[in-house]
Image 1 (spheres, rainbow, N blue to C red):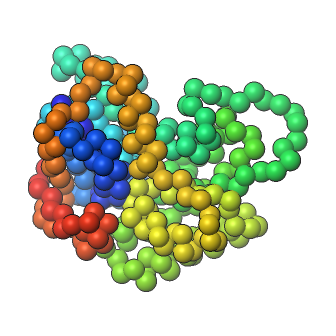
Image 2 (cartoon, rainbow, N blue to C red):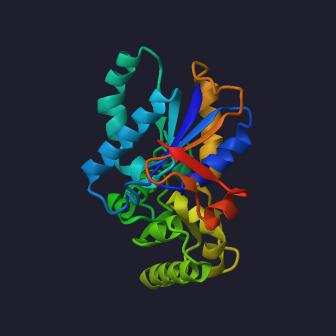
Image 3 (cartoon, one colour):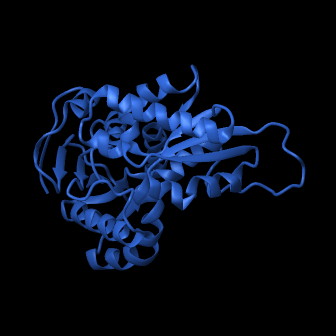
Length: 283
């Protein structure tokens, strides 16, 4: 099998890059739905339909496991697909297939607790709150998935989400560094104003943002820890393969990059992040 990695655009390459480092012999197929990016401002049903279509394409290309390297797809579509679509699709294919997301690994990394853990509710007053900022697309912020799921596990962590409506599009388009820096600084200032102070930690809750992680570090107070979704996802996938030996990763180090948009070379920003020029073929 190959491991499929799906995103609305190039942001998922941040996850894909870390997965390739973690599983260097594995076969990977990356699919960017650039014809429909960004997902963050789309209605929920549309996000579900687009995500399902992307997964179907990757399964048709020979993937048995698809990682949704997109917070919006993971937060809005994943549970619906796992509960209402995948069971029948598996039966039709006659082979085990699955779709995983990146929000569960991120919450595990943010809380230091396994997903199955739920905190015992107590009336005791929390002496000191850990303020966690989540920078995300509007759809992810509106879902409140990080606030809800982290509160179930850690009552000493207060989560504040900051929607960044234009940022993924700017990164996708390869916007100049100074324009990206100004946009990021504006979002950091906005959330600090809402909180009343700077956050103690931050999640880059859109995989596009990892490409500009250095600009977030510059905008946040020095030393503010960032929770990196690519590393959390790679760690979680390694644990998943230990629990599910029925899935294999391939062994030919295949690397394919597909897009529903315009094929060819990606922006210089993406090439700089990837470490080499990167060209996509038409999906």
